[in-house]
Image (cartoon, rainbow, N blue to C red; front, side, top):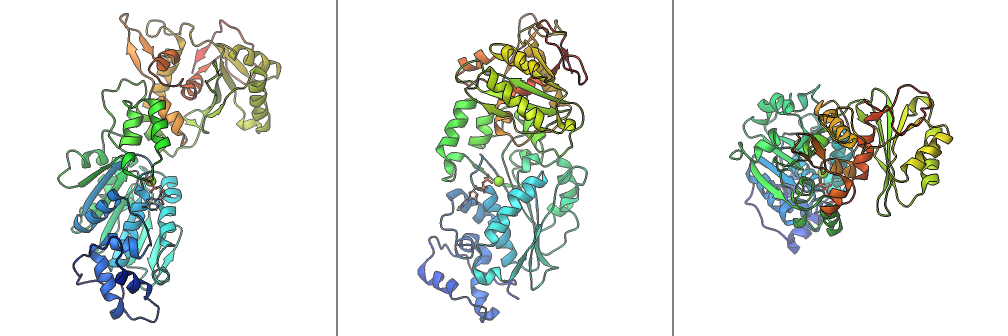
Length: 489
Ligand SMILES: Nc1ncnc2c1ncn2[C@@H]1O[C@H](COP(=O)(O)OP(=O)(O)O)[C@@H](O)[C@H]1O
Ligand SMILES: [Mg+2]
């Protein structure tokens, strides 16, 4: 059998691929027997970098990817924290295939916090690279939607995708093999319970584990790998600047939108854990956690519409149903009152009744009041509120906007909410700061104050916050009253 590389040869440092080796690979044919192939597999056993070049035809391996690959050959536990898009999922896919082809028997379990991250991101990346295999190697495996197996010995030589949900924490249980590997993508979002339940498997002698992720949280198993458990884990940090895969435009946009000192920039670009002393109303960890929860929407449907005040601002629409923001926040630029009202009316009318919002909350500041008037004319269940009015709980907040932001914060604290995969919403939510004033009241940073910090107006987050204000109840069309008897739900 091809996969028993029991007496591995010393590793080769073959980058770039020397000519004779390339010839040797190209010469592999189905007519060859294992004895002829043995030297190649033996070389790959200790040399994942050569495997990635030769078997997967990857022309350029990032410097950091090469370092992690080498560590995978030498260490049992490797953890990588990084900014977005540096090439982690690709790297993990290569590791899966390298291990699958150079060990035998071998079992590899891959997981991620959500089915989307596991199947649509990680597993689709594994399949993508598997199809790049040298044709002869490709003919040795069978690729399924959640499993890749060696056709020679499918029961003992395979890689599988397993979801890691709190309700079903057995992702890493029930595997026994001489050569075990556990792979965790977006590890910051994986619940500790999954690690606790899988600890026995993870710590099986000789088992290898590779965790990768954006360092979004300052607690939990992934965080501890870089701190308390540092001795056990071989760690890497990769910033977007270290990867040729990240576009400078992305880094610049993140710096402009959130500031280079923001947690969002630290986590998404630098690959640093967030600072804990950050005084934002809602923490990055809270929004990231909410984006990895898999819960169904339940409750009333409310839309929040933040209408652009100035040329550069966006008009933003957030749609929330109880504990779930059901869609990415939509934005428009340069639309007048009539156009905005028209767009919203069209969206409303196109929906089946059970998906229509019970209330559409619009901030009446600026041209917002015109939008409210027009939407009322069109018969929509709209209410206008003025977020600079005084709030219900006057002793705690000075303005309604502060109170609404606090409602938003409490919504996250419940830990039973879900956000869509919406980077702008998550980024803006985790950027707005607050302070306690001398009179003890909580004051949330205003749009203007953010502009003074050099940041754009958080229109997307404000649209979300508006969904926490509601006048009246029920499906009736609500008459607008400026000094409304608004209610915070
Ligand atoms: N060395 C590489 N050569 C070619 N493509 C790569 C390489 N590294 C990553 N990629 C591709 O770049 C894209 C982004 O990488 P990905 O692994 O998804 O990043 P991350 O998981 O860090 O967000 C993917 O399409 C991936 O296949
Ligand atoms: Mg990834």
